[in-house]
Length: 323
Image (cartoon, rainbow, N blue to C red; front, side, top):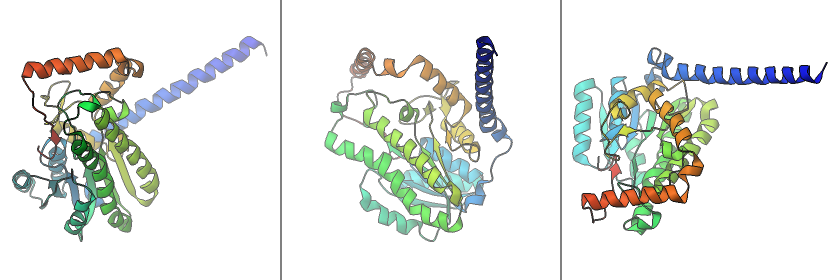
C-alpha cells in the first residue's frame, strides 16, 4: 500500500468522522427544537407543584404561566406582595390552577431559607425554576464603578448564586424520595461568553452553568433532571428591550424552552437563540471581546448614553424582584 493510499484512507475516515459528528448535532437540534413542538413531555409526571423564583415579571412570570397552562399548581416567589397577588390571580383565572405565594427578598443572606423551608414543607414539589437574578447597573460598567459596592456585590451574589444552591437544597430531598424531579436553572449567554463590563453578573451566570452540569451528572441516575437554560435576547425589565424578530418575548421563550425538557439538559431554550449564540461566537471571538480597545469603546459608549439620558444618580435593576 502506497503512502498516497494511506493518506486517502486517513482523509476519508476523517471526513466520515466529521460528517457523523455534524449529522449528530443536526439531529440533536432537530429533536430539541422541532420534534419537541409536537411531542412534549407531560410535566405533571414530576409532581403536583412547581416553584418559580422571581415570578412576578419577565422570564419568571412567563415560566409560571406556562407551567400552570400545562397543568401544574404554582408556588410564586418574589418580594412584592402586590405583584405576587396579581400573578396568582392571573394564573387562577386563566388556567384554574392552585397558587401559593411567598414573599421573600433573595438579596438577603442564608437567613431567609428556614422560612422558605417552612413554606414549602408538605408540598409535592416536582419542578423548581431558579430564575431570580439581578444586575448592579443598567448599562456596561467597570467593576469599581458599582454603586454602593459593598452592599451591591453581596446582593448580586446572594440573589444570583446563593438562591440557586439553597433552593435546590430545599427541594432535592422530596425529589429523591419520589425518584423524580426537574430543576431548571436560568443562566445566560454571558455565562458562556465572559462579558467584560458585566463582570460580576457574567461570573454568577457561569456559576449557574457549572453548578447545573455537575448536579445533572450527580442526580440523573436517581430520576432527577437538572436543566440549564441560557437565553440570549429576551424582552424583560432587566434589559428593557422590546420583543422583535431578533428579541424573543418572555412568553414565547418560556413556551419553547419548556418544550426542550426531556430533549436537552443544556440548552439556549429556542432555535433563534442557538443561531444567535453561534453567530455571536463567530463575530465576537474571545480575543476581540477581551481586548482593551473593544472594552474601552463599550465603556465610552455606556458613559455617553448615561450623559445623554442625564442620569447622574446610582441605580440598579432587579429582574423578577422589582419586576
